Image (cartoon, rainbow, N blue to C red; front, side, top):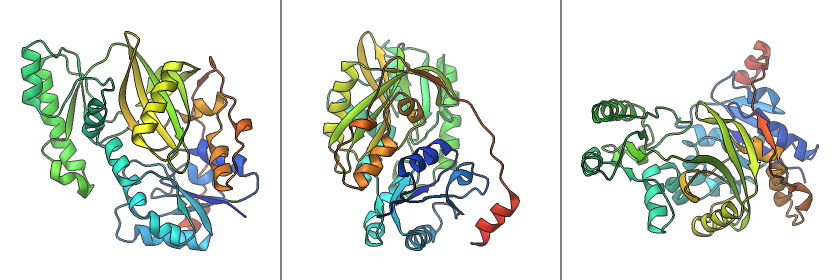
Amino acid sequence: MKQNILFTCAGRRNYLIDHFKEALNGRGKIIAIDEQCYAPALVDADISYVVPNIYHDNYISILTDIVKKHAVTAIISLNDLELPIISDNKDLFEKNGAKAIISNPTIIDICFDKWKTFNFFKQLNFNVPKTYIDLNKAITDIEKGKLKFPLVLKPRWGSSSINVNYPESLEELKLSYKLQSINNRKKISNKNNLENIEYTVLIQEKLDGTEYGMDILNDFEGNYYGSFAKEKLMMRCGETDIAKSIINVQFENLGKQISKVLKHVVTLDCDVFIVNDKLYILELNPRFGGGYPFSHEAGINIAAIYIEWLYENKDLSKFNKYKENITFSKCDRLVQNFASVVAQIKDD
């Protein structure tokens, strides 16, 4: 049986397209879609489409047509805002033969809403940084000496470190909070967030420690498979630029705990800090994260594992050769977007 994989909101994730094409090894096609005709990942896919914005009324019906036309067997979403949309329509896609490889909407909501992430893990006694959504409560704790500058100011619903600020005084905190609140209200388009529109900004303790990324992998039923961590040596625009793979029992134990309580499906990208030998959870992304290429190059081929699971194969040993102290750096490459190809995609 052919496994034709559809990547939605493909964007710049060319490496994922390449990893899955290699893993398929001719046993299927990679279809990539994006609303931008110049999205780089469209160039590397076997079949590409330019589609409307994810909030367009016909978005799901267009995806369903693509699923039917190309006998898609699996869908992988790469965009935080799109995740709940795909998850809400899992049954529809499955009726048309495509498995949406994605967590349920409740898990996605816990991960995407950083305030819910904080409260979820705090209630479970996981280590998390002090976090506030009420400016007045944060100021009260600053005056009491319970919270100290510098702080981290970030959108409650956001990604890629966009609009993250680091206020170092009360005046700067108030001004940054007000400006970010205004900007966030303008940008929030997910209707599920409108009931909480008064609190769109997170005020967070700035941890003084070492930052790590971790891929926590569950199977399609939410059962734990493994955790793969790397130390972030350099960041750029919210993404890991240079990283070194590590193998550490603390991370393995943390990954198992998170997997057990969250029961997410497949890949969970997790940001972790070590402060005074304690692991603190910052953020979760229930999708492939920007740090996955480092894990892949260190020996864990999650793309191939997905394919084996789709074929219901259990022996994954040859795809898990994760090694520590492997350091890699990201670099950009250019891809040519041919005008004729773009026109063909639009006319399809």
